[in-house]
Image 1: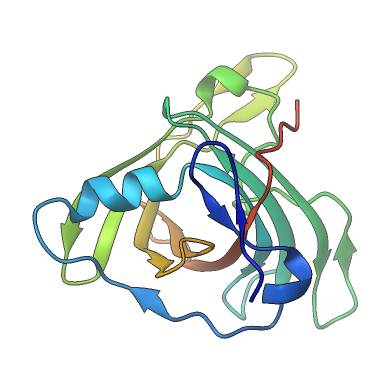
Image 2: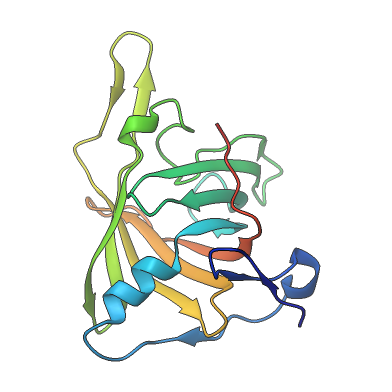
Length: 180
């Protein structure tokens, strides 16, 4: 597989060489595992989201950039459902809005356990009458894993009040992109 090395030392692969490849996670061992995964997901990613079967949308595409400072930018697109329903710009985490509240778009990985690395991601909502706010529930990230090359990322998203999980399968994009 052709690999591209960016100036920051990030390894990424052209989309055409990784599309359809099975994901093989690398589970780092030891005290530095959380730090390695946290640093490893910084950058831009594209791929797909798959929701539980009882949700309105079955799947959609996603583009997300995780910044080293704990912020993220995200877009969802091309949502589809088995009943024929489509949504051109679905919320990337099924709930929330797409970057109308950039100062609220925060992520953090803060624990490692039997299921791997986990953390939280804020999913803000925007309403004209009250502007940006965070819901009472927290967005939970779990099973965060990179492959050995560092160009594939998998994680699950669920709300702290029990909705989900949504499974994300992403490929690193070179160079890092900005959606704002």
